[in-house]
Length: 259
Ligand SMILES: CSC[C@@H](O)[C@@H](O)C(=O)COP(=O)(O)O
Ligand SMILES: [Zn+2]
Image 1 (tube, helix red, strand yellow):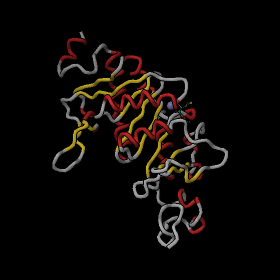
Image 2: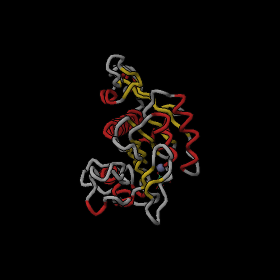
Image 3: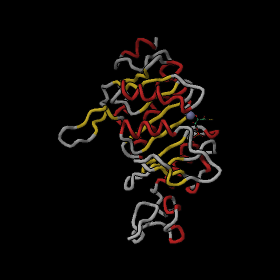
Image 4: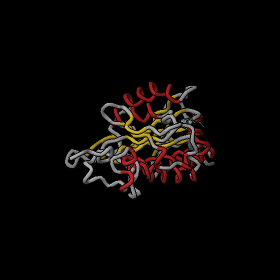
């Protein structure tokens, strides 16, 4: 049976008939969960959170069945993306299976690839969150926050030996996120990101000073939850700092900073 560009054989290709057998089968789908559609809907959502305005930031998703890596073009308004704008990369050869005309792939591609390769990520989110930028000015090399309920949404880096599932942080734990320095060009961040990935094997995010944050997870849903929870915690940390309370202070210790 002949194979389609989407990775299926043509008899099971789920793309609309007009796209079957063409490279558009990689991006044409009526399924809102298809990476080409999900990148567009999530970027809209992120735009309204002020995370990907002014063309900054973005998201890359690995197709959970085919393993194809979906990447948006560089320098475009992320809330206006359409599935036909997507680059599609083969995860093994790292060659592009689909290259939309007139566009270059996101400058974040080498950083997304580092998270796929070194962390087995299923999706990588990059935002220009103001909370991440502010925390990168407040903290030196690590962002730390402790004893806040929302921490429980973040993985600890440990796995349950019985189920193999990620164990999340507890309320009493401290979340630590490494901070790397920004560079003139996005792709030049790759070495710094890779070093941080090695040094912090349990981390699910890296903050880029005066720039934003990269957050990844084993699935797109988990990456989305981690990004939301981390942004909430970054915002809480900024507010605690404004009141003079260290974000990793012990339970009850805040009183002594509030006099
Ligand atoms: C506002 S320009 C931002 C870019 O330099 C970069 O930091 C970024 O996040 C997006 O890069 P892009 O190549 O458009 O996907
Ligand atoms: Zn950026």
